[in-house]
Amino acid sequence: MGAFLDKPKTEKYNSRGEGKGLRYGLSSMQGWRVEMEDAHTAVLGLPAPGMTEWSFFAVYDGHAGSRVANYCSKHLLDHIIGASLGTGGAQGLQGTQTGSDSSTSDPPPSAPPAVEAVKTGIRTGFLRIDEHMRSFSDLRNGMDRSGSTAVGILLSPDHLFFINCGDSRAVLYRNSHVCFSTLDHKPCNPREKERIQNAGGSVMIQRVNGSLAVSRALGDYDYKSVDGKGPTEQLVSPEPEVFEMVRAPEQDQFVVLACDGIWDVMSNEELCEFVRSRLEVSDDLERVCNEVVDTCLHKGSRDNMSVVLVCLPNAPKVSEEAVRKDAELNKYLESRVEEMLSRSAEEGVPDLVTVMRNLTADSVPNLPPGGGLASKRSVIEAVYNRLNPHREEDGPSCFIW
Figure 1 (cartoon, one colour):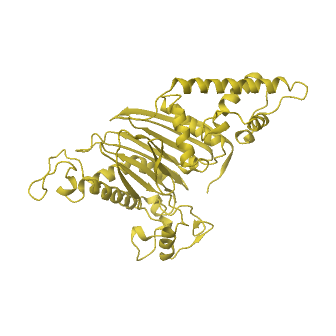
Figure 2: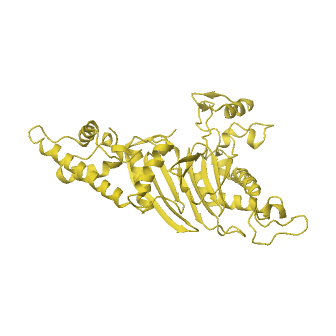
Figure 3: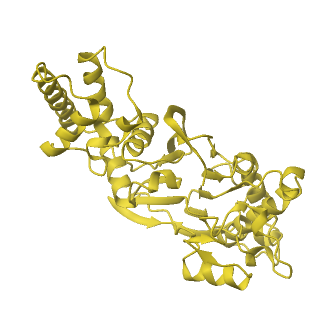
């Protein structure tokens, strides 16, 4: 869904932060799409009683416009906090480790919400914001038909709450492998298809009524108007799936949240191995996220791209050996490009696509896992441009080969 540009917009939005035992970086790029419809949230320390040591991160992948994604990026967390702290009265506010009996006394004001209260609060928060946005005149009257997926993680000192509504995705890298991944909500999934059909819809060409590629999302009110059905029984449901895990401080390394513009061209394992390899070369999380986005563009992603990387205390550290090997790889690639251009005086300078294809045929050793040659395109392009300053402007084909 959506139109494309003649040439991708490669400017990036970046941010980073540190606190509450975490470090994070994020990067987003419009890419080939005519509009940037992604949004994100990153909050260290929640503004709520008992939750000042908690943090929240999310990526929103909008479609048919950016209104819903942008609104959720600013307000979804407030709905989740309000619902989590308000669920079940005193029991909802009961701390998980206080051991007090809520039937005889109220918990102290600073006690964090219990695990089940948080999970219920997350689901309730999604339903509340979805109902709230329905009242906006442009969404209610069909002048704006936008919707958005949402994937997030809520971190307490003891737990990880993974949240997903749609086909953006979160993965946890623990003990040097992909330990957990959220599940994409696609219309072809049996459970999703059953709900769609029960609401009078159909799944054609893997889309809801042959149109929408996700089966759960916020907004998308054209698909939420079936009489006699509740909000979670509509063609498209705003209900998230929530997965809770106990933190393992000695094993948890990082969490990646990303929209499908990333996952379209990299698997869970490829992305996590690429991130791991980059963290061994640089502790600049913005730089790591930028490399993820650039690599996905060069691998052929045609969508908006957004990635949030949350590093936990046991995240991979910079390694002198990895830095040395990466520098040697860059030097090798530079020398190969120089060699190719120096031999082409009689035949004419090859374009960048040809250079990349020749390098691919070389089977270059020690490329970053998961990223391959695409992750080194900026290095190759830099030396190519230096040696060929009078080249013609690169066309769209130079971004993929």
